[in-house]
Amino acid sequence: MILQQITVLGATGSIGVSTLDVVARHPERYSVFALSGNTKVSVLAEQCRKHRPRYAVVMDDDTAVHLRGLLATLDTPIEVLVGTDALCAVSSDSEVDIVMAAIVGAAGLMPTLAAVNANKKVLLANKESLVMAGHLFMQALKSSSAVLLPIDSEHNAIFQCLPQNKHDLSAIGVSKLLLSASGGPFRGWSADQMKNVTPEQACAHPNWSMGNKISVDSATLMNKGLELIEACWLFDMPADQVEIVVHPQSIIHSLVQYIDGSVIAQLGNPDMRTPIAHALAWPERIDSGVKDLDLFDVSLLEFERPNFADFPCLELACESARIGLDAPAVLNAANEIAVQAFLDRRIGFTQIADVVKESLSNAIFSEPRSLIAVQESDTKARSFAAAYVSRIES
Ligand code: NDP
Ligand code: MG
Image (tube, rainbow, N blue to C red; front, side):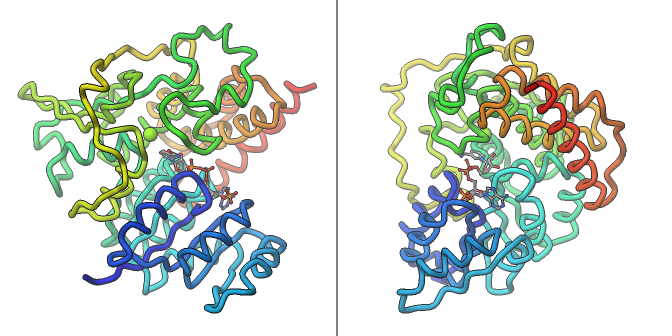
């Protein structure tokens, strides 16, 4: 078996750790080429010790010095590199076969695009890069020979429910994509009840263990809105053919409805190692370490309509999907600022939606024709949102 070289961007995060867990189960298939992290330097050092990559990438010089110190006693040298250019270099190196794009937020855009442009097999967890720059991202994909495999459990499920290598979904009789949503920790709560929730409550997801940012997004339902935009780009579907279905057990990860009345679903225990293993090995299948689904244990599968009124972030995301242009980039940037402000206890939970709403109202939307234009929309929205957070605070 040919050993495939993998770069894991965001190795120290929730998806990164799950990826390395799956990779370690298959030493005959995968070898780690590079790992990246940001603040969790001791976790990164431990991962380097275990997986022996050629490179480790961090985002600033002080962290690099710290990491080099922690790795000094290793017999095989690991080169520590710094910054976004280094992330792009380890994503596009000619020796790399697979890139796991699992950096959170807009910071993931450039290295993920670098992997696409270098024709890699790209495992996309970083949904924010598609939300920000979907048009440019898909254009880059089309003009490359890269293979893009969705890691987000819903999109990975949809991918699994479609025939292989079919790009025009209406031509193969797909009428609708049904996007599963757990409803998050506050399913059934009113906006009023959510006013005083804490970051700890918001990050305690009932079914999935994830990084803080996506956990808060799951609690506001912004995550489902970002995923709707992600689905539109990945599967070339208009937003009105993507329906959100709240399914609290998180066993059905999403479904595809066909014009003959068939609905095909992908089921499994809620563990990200399943979509990660699926994408790593695709088109083959490998063991992921996830325990078998026991339907008798599950016994009940429920479905509800989403509550747009009490979760305004979902409506705001759907609205920016309808507007198009750079509205999703503005939505994403404002949301990143607002979520961080909530995690820092500077604003309340329900004020996340206020920040995003104001940022969208303030923006004049335009077609983002280049990455520079996307970055400009992102920067402008971030500075407006940050100023609005300060105003709310005082
Ligand atoms: P985490 O917060 O757990 O991990 C994020 C990773 O990105 C960490 O390695 C972190 O480094 C690194 N990072 C953070 N900021 C920067 C930055 N500015 N520059 C470079 N690296 C940075 O997030 P998750 O693993 O939960 O999520 C990763 C992505 O996958 C997100 O886009 C999320 O939406 C998506 N996703 C996650 C799912 C999940 O189950 N967790 C499910 C579906 C999608 P460090 O920790 O060292 O600071
Ligand atoms: Mg998801």
